Image (cartoon, rainbow, N blue to C red; front, side):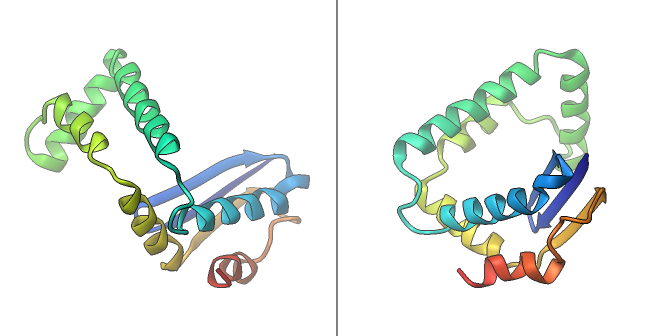
Length: 136
């Protein structure tokens, strides 16, 4: 089993993968990220589905007292107050297709941080992974 982490400013991608498929998983992640950065690659239906999924995940997570407590603590540390849930849901609703394209372009043009743990024999080198983003 392999744990792979790729990080760029604001985004952290990580997954556990059978070591034999590490190279394929990295290529897939790079292809998906670069595709999302292409104008028009994300359609409004996909964006709406992603927004609904994100809001559902937030609401379901907050049903847990432990998660809600962690969320309150995180907000106090970040904002010095607890923000109403509606503020976060509104922010999600305000995300546009242009926002997705712009942040994706910024993401793939930023320096990559990469770490892997486990059977790393099939993990592409750092330079190889970087080149997957620079060639786009």
